[in-house]
Length: 318
Ligand SMILES: Nc1nc2c(c(=O)[nH]1)N[C@H]1C(S)=C(S)[C@@H](COP(=O)(O)O)O[C@H]1N2
Ligand SMILES: [Mo]
Image (cartoon, rainbow, N blue to C red; front, side):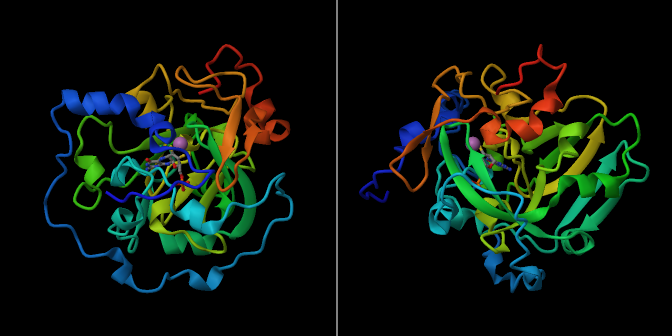
């Protein structure tokens, strides 16, 4: 193990991964500690060659999205990730390189006029990419501010032509334990699944992301296609999406499946609603010594609060 000095802003691993705390116990109970599949892994997917959409970067920045804080250093954001398919530490860069991201197809199915599959490059060229500066808040109480490149999820919903019975959009990550050793750990409800209501998915802020910092998105951030919903805790922002299903019932999400008492479907950011094991009142800003007060809906209340009118009886806050 690498021993190194921690910078002032860094969160000790023990505090930074509370999502994993109860899992250690489960892992132990399952007798599976450290037992990753030792099967031969494919070569680095980095050998794939240049990204086929490179010519689209950097995309035009949409000036409508501004920040109240500096943009997080690119290297920090790129080396402090949650991607459980590749392990429970924040250091998944090397492991995630094993994921081949081309060719990559996304299946659109469920309650749509006609189910179809589409290659990610074809999809990217059907839409218009733009760059947006968003705050990003993990349920573990750290935050960053990032220039994402992508397109509104709304345009994908339109492309899919959902039937009137569709009430939710369910999104799933690829499933391939040969490249993603975490997926051999069968006490997790793989594949990673997330979901939004159709109204949430059609909101302007909901972004399908294909790039970051003016370049195609690297694997550890969820290549080649991920969701970003900046008013919700980060676990809603599912990575490396391979299937999008339009469904009538609320999907059971990954974290809900693991620990429903701590993680729910809505997961909207709220400083006043604590996680059962820690406060959400403030957040550690990556790359700074500063703790900032957490903002309601992560600072996007003005835009999204209306989505939740009439839903006050629901557990809206994580
Ligand atoms: N498939 C998948 N998506 C995921 C996760 C994951 O483990 N697997 N982690 C989530 C969590 S908890 C966070 S905070 C963000 C982290 O995104 P980043 O690593 O790009 O900052 O991804 C989310 N999406
Ligand atoms: Mo997170």
